Length: 83
Image 1 (cartoon, helix red, strand yellow):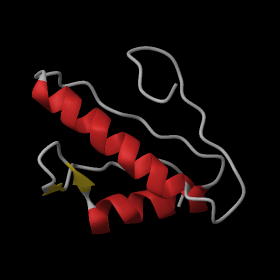
Image 2 (cartoon, one colour; image 1 turned 180 degrees about the horizontal axis):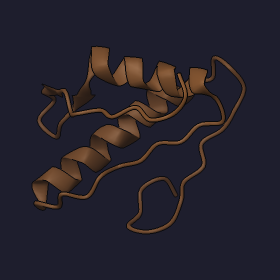
Image 3 (tube, rainbow, N blue to C red; image 1 turned 30 degrees about the vertical axis):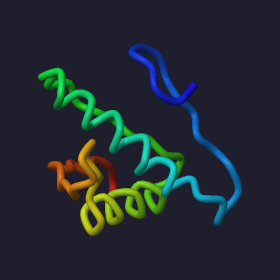
Image 4 (tube, one colour; image 1 turned 60 degrees about the vertical axis):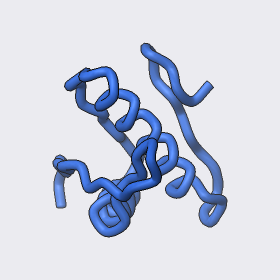
């Protein structure tokens, strides 16, 4: 299950299989849901490499997420780690 209230979700697979696109879709749904219910919790994304986090961060900043009405939204993104 990819969306749930508690726990951890693991998304893995070989390069080029759509993990980042899938992640952006899941983040869009979760972010929109949290906004809709007025929940101010943060969403944390972890990856096994700096390159993976850089790629995800770049995609979120450039493309943004899609809200429930199909509009592009650009949430605040904080990238932590050794660069």
